[in-house]
Amino acid sequence: MAQLLQTWDNTHFFQGTDDPRIATEIDAVKSEIASLVTGCEPFGDRIATAEILAPEQFAALIAEIKAIHLQRNSIVERLSNVHTFISSTLSVNAKDPDANIWLPTLQQIWATLTQAMTPVDVFLVRVSDAFVTALLADPALEELSFSVIHSRRLKDQLLSVDEEKSSPGWRSRVSMAGQSLRQVGRQSSVHHQRRIRRLGQGRQFARQRPAHDSRSGLARH
Image (cartoon, rainbow, N blue to C red):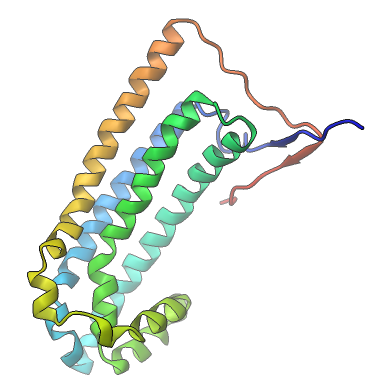
């Protein structure tokens, strides 16, 4: 009985793990996360008064959160596409050199994205029920309902606002997002240097082609 070889045809996104468009896409994602950090940071200063916001303040803050949410969704889609491409390659060839260089970089970018969202996530735990009701009434934000409601059920287990902000880790969680982006940038540079050296030595990378089981694991735009 012939062995079924599983392959993935994702060439409509990238031609291979050495495709320079991967680096271009990662650079674009890093830039988007840097912008997201800027948008999220002000919510850290709003946490102390989150529970006593006046109803007339709701609309402007919800508009900010909506913009942040949509931007985060865009980042997640782009980052997921690259990550899925790299992961599907490794599922076929665990020794692919470029994929093994990109994978830890992608994992760090995911962590950076989580860190960037920390001020907004904490703010949404602290705000009043009335604010959350108004927030989730927006169809574009309705998909947040599970995560927001679940997180708010743990509200009584959180530190007080003063305790939270005096914690050494509070400010560092936001500043770490920027530091992580710089570190990822250095890692990407190392990746390019290694790839250039390999190309200069004339190494050729075999690309996986569709066999009996050809599929695509990436989201199409």
